[in-house]
Image 1 (cartoon, rainbow, N blue to C red):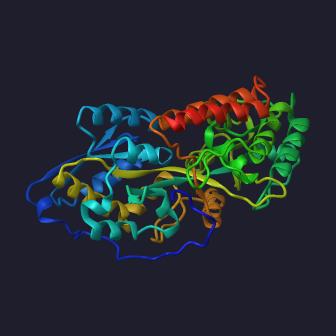
Image 2: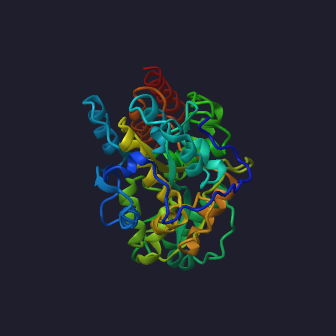
Image 3: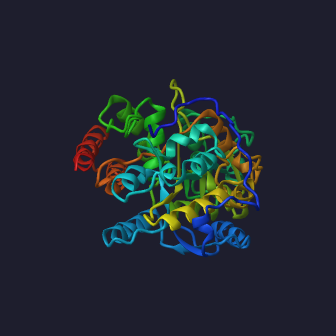
Length: 415
């Protein structure tokens, strides 16, 4: 199972790991140096976690090696594995869970040390355990979780005469009605206004619309399920503001920059942006991601897991020592400053109030972002993004776009 069904979280706490971390004799026998293939450089909070662990001088030294984004780091790992030199550890996007296990050979942590592995995963809420359980194997620590929420530029919102006291839960009808009011009130009149809305042209916001309409891209059993009436309904609603002139689709980086500059009124994007958005020219207010009218919400999440790839026994044991610290309250508190959701059982406060809608979505229950199966699963997100763009730009109808994406993805999944 790789899905997380909507449920109440069970906080089965285990004892926090402190300065007296337990290591095997193999890890103690000599200082072991572990390189982590990472998506974060030395200026990010992950480096602080690494530094705090190394400061304990427990016989294991961790090196944070920046290897680019998820796709770039995973592509580098493919080459390393082919050469017989897999990374000792790697920060791997959840969407590459199948690929990590079946193609890259991510280790089952319980095969390294079952007692330690169970203690490590016990530091996390039971609802996130399935995210790092692939083919029955525990392949990592559920390190980072984010979810798309709705950010609103309070200055533009108030300038359009709209109420800044937002509902806690919204749907697309509410969002689009207010986007039309914004457009009518501000277009050509407000000096910074460019677009009423941006829904993020990537795989996980479109996935949210499909799931909130009752469908899936990849279903909970790991099967391609895109060719459905629910997927067509979700994508029809997703594309509607672009078709109505309320949204000019751009890249995620362009979108975020435009929102921070004060040019966009509404932006649906990763909850991790709550760290920087309030500091920009656009003073944000936040609420949940829009649901679909008449449907139960079924929101998804993104993020990554810390996996062990080394086949060397001592390196693998040393990697578990680092994971013990990462899972501890100390490690989680340091890590929380990056703005990801707290999926651990530890009491770690939110970094600010802008994160409250994201925490509420976590409490409601979150599925994983699309986990692409097949040996060519790494290519799946690019295929889906391409077809999303084609539908948004009216290069393909919604029905034709869904069918085209389904057929192309089916070939990748079967490979």
